[in-house]
Image 1 (cartoon, rainbow, N blue to C red):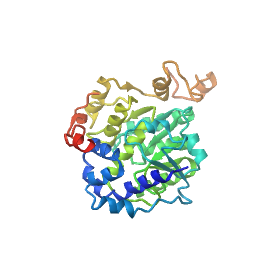
Image 2 (image 1 turned 135 degrees about the vertical axis):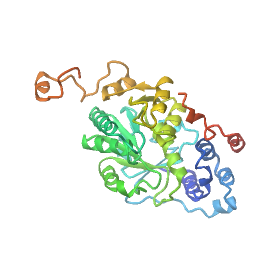
Image 3 (image 1 turned 90 degrees about the vertical axis):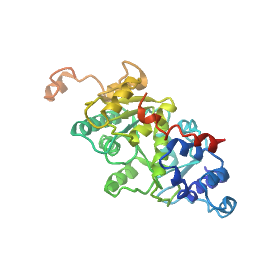
Image 4 (image 1 turned 30 degrees about the vertical axis):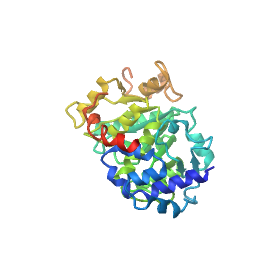
Amino acid sequence: MVCSPCLRRSAVLAAAAPALARFASRPQLLLSVLALPSERLLRAARVEDPPGVLRRLQLPVLTDRVPTALCRHDPGYPRALRELPSAPSVLYATCTPGRLRELLSPAAPTVAIVGSRGLTPYAEDITRTLSGDLARAGVTVVSSVNEGPDGIAHEAALDGSGRTIAVMACSPDLSHLTRQDDLHQRILADGTAISEFPPGFFEHQRWCFSASRRIIAALADVIVIVEAGGFSSAVLTTHFATELGRDIAIVPGRVTEPGGDTMLWLLQDGAHPVASAQDVLEVIHGAGARGPALHDPTPHELADDPTMSGPVLHDPALHAPAFHDPALHGVAA
């Protein structure tokens, strides 16, 4: 169920989208603006005639492709999202309400797999293995549909008949990335796509992508980073996740690779090194945890598998002005 005030707030967000572009390079300030009451948000974004905008609002309408919406007052609204000061007023989904509650059930652990788009063959291989094994162990995989680890994680989870949730930066039934259309359609068919943006919303705004990363960070029990070059969306997701107290896991790689220094800083700051689904499960549940698909191999399985011949944050980028903007306190006041 969705109450009228929450639908109005969702409509405000869509109406203010072009003006909110001014915060695209200042993600922490953006989240503070998103936490403001509607009229103050419009004023902070310098939208002309905020009272008039509020009077002319048209409430979002669900469609056959986006049949589900949960507002913050719905008992089924994810508890994890309530931890966000800028929690979405409405969460839209392409699946049924029952399926959404199943996918977001606190009983099933959720892992986000993120990273830079330009992957090495090593990173691509380990992303596929990690995501597939986690999916078979009953873990829900959540990420964007970006090229790189995010999209590969969805593919591997779906290939393993697992549970997957795509967080979109537009209406959940749409995608800005035409090269990922086939993957998006697979997710709509076998998993779900969610968004805080209402049906039909298709603004191509950088801030929308930044805002979606906080949803990924909030929904995940653990964020696994597979290569993160420079100040990437993976680093941004990590920052949001750290603020929420989520566990951060790093797939170790070469420090000489792009972003290798960032990965090293995160490990030195307490992130967990992981190289397998078993490692990730132990981050979630504690040492010795084991999912249903991660049993010890039988002698027969070992004989059939020729590869089984042996035993099987203080990142400087996060202290940039984008995260410590003096204007932040003026807007939020």
